[in-house]
Image (cartoon, rainbow, N blue to C red; front, side):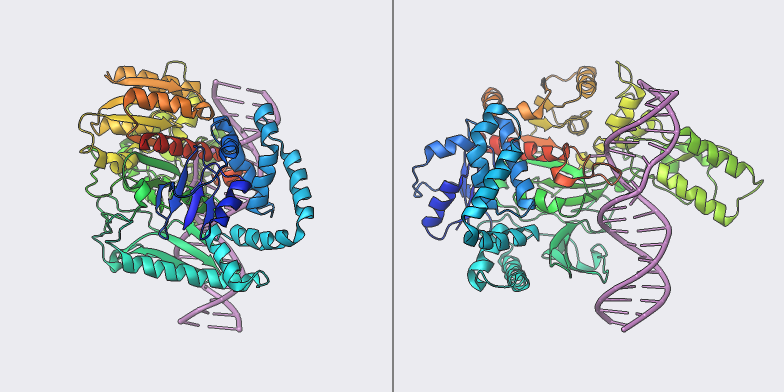
Length: 581
DNA sequence: TAAAGCCAGATCGGTATA
DNA sequence: TATACCGATCTGGCTTTA
């Protein structure tokens, strides 16, 4: 039996371990809830046969902490575990400093570090085991697998031996799970319409070995196993078609989901596919080990947009938004065709991002091309094409290149014309907001399965709403928006959503909230009581610290902005817990 | 044939300055 | 507020080497 708990302290963990057969799996969740996991990772509510008298301790990590503290705990935990301290020791240190944290409302990292050093020096022998455990966790192995390996191989075993044991153990589990499918008691049914030959081509670099995450014939994601450290890394497969996209082979129509999240409320999380290594492993691990669906929006519009989605939506009978948007640059921007040279073979634009080419670049390119009466020589073509791709430029005249305009961003991303225009929104704001937005057709394709489930409308908790990509997608699908709580930090974006809501004559209720970190369990409980529960929790947390375009603070999941993922998880957990009752 | 090396291409960004 | 300028990381295809 594996226990996952939201309000863990070391004392509780120790207490649980004494019960026998119990392993502590997860120690960060926001709500005051416990889950018992069976061997398939399926969650069920806390079994009341387990008895402990630690209510006061639970209270310290649970409801008495402000909601924002939970995210801080998670960040601190990740931070110090990353430094090599054991998870248990870090939790204990955070626990000991928790009163100061909650009272001061600020990170007390130095105090925690002091406590950690103290705990480490007090218990060096335990620390040796902890260090082994910590190394294995850092290598990407699940906590429970690492514990089993140390238990079976002994604390003195070499890391390589432990890693070999875990790999063999995981492989065995994977084979077991494949054999159990599709009619096991604890997973949803699995089916696919694909044949092995239809599957995306898999990368066969000689530097890495790839383990395909197969569900019968389907391959949704790829686990990379590096020869150097035997660390499993999720990375997007190519072509990036997820569980399937319109007009492409390889449609997967169902999959396994942990029973605890196999039904309502539905949730949908989005972020950049090409995040730093290991980020999607962490996200997936928090989101119930659900495999990410990596999709490039080039299958839905004329621009690339490689994103990962983790959700518990049904995947059978998806349908695209109509009308189908133009799928090539030339169709989307017909006025460019006249000036498009034959040696520029692009049919898709690169990802639409928040920044655009400076005029110096397009001016330099114009002057370069003007030197040639006809087609420029190949070396010049190559240099120009490189700049064109880098800055995502289109041909707007003879030898004249230009970056896209905000209204073209809107069209390519599936938003209504002038969605972000006017009302005090600057041009810079528009590029920034649109560059961060959902591609509506892509998201709507995934959400289209909800249309039959909610014929009378839907209650939505929209986190990190941005300019309302989720709301626009649901509206365009014809799903009535009954109650929408839209949480968005930027005032300019909240205004855009408010204007869109009024312009589209919505009959439901829109409540806009500023800060995701201030959404408390009490507040959620009030909304749930008032609306009868949320049907969909949707959002894409900030990607600033994931993006390859970020040259300064690409710090991964621990980055200042991207760590807000933990807030998504905290709120999702809280909603599911409240609505379970 | 596998492994390693090389290189081109892509990227929901950040910051200083006018 | 708008503009200009700022590399790093990762993937994937290709070639070379053992």
